[in-house]
Image (cartoon, rainbow, N blue to C red; front, side, top):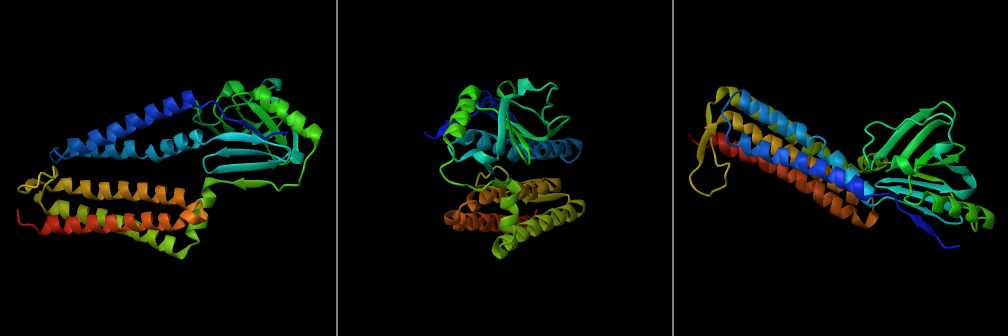
Length: 302
């Protein structure tokens, strides 16, 4: 029997998450543009909070797009493999007790939190089945996969095809024994944290950004104006309210978070780990450069 690959429905989920990501990114860009020209006071604080609030969920939705794009269910005579971003679940076929549509349940199954199309992810408890883990994208195509430890809710684009492939594989029998495997995104973080160099780079970037925020916060009350060129025109430095110094630590933090996530992505593979250290090192260096930029601004005579 050939291996059967059954991707989940992706188009609608990618579209919706793409729109959300575009709106959030646009809000961040507009917020920073407004910060560059806002005066001290409520307007500046409002745009700062808008920028931070819009940026916070961007990594979350970006990861969901990546996970959905790479998602798929693969079944052969030995196992059913579920891949969803950094989440991997490899279930030996002998461990699967049954596969059936969610419509067969006598009591409805509640959806996980934030059930957007393309991302039905999380745990729910069913009165008859117990804990059900959703790794799906479409509530209309849900299949339940029962094992001795847990029930999984998946959504192949062709549910009947996957169920038939499972039935044929069960009839033919397994060719070789395989071990169950569960990998969660948090495992990558804990694994990288055990590396001394990774831990040093993470903490260095963290403390540099904390120090940058504290320093900028101490400068602002004691200084009315600073010389800074936010437009990067290359001409004379522009005199602006000191409150706009907060733009530098905010930008530094955003870059540090983006670098941390990118490094985790490359850390998954042994051959790419050198690249992840380069990314984390670059994030630490950029935070240090922002710190030097604040030093340059406060020492430049107004």
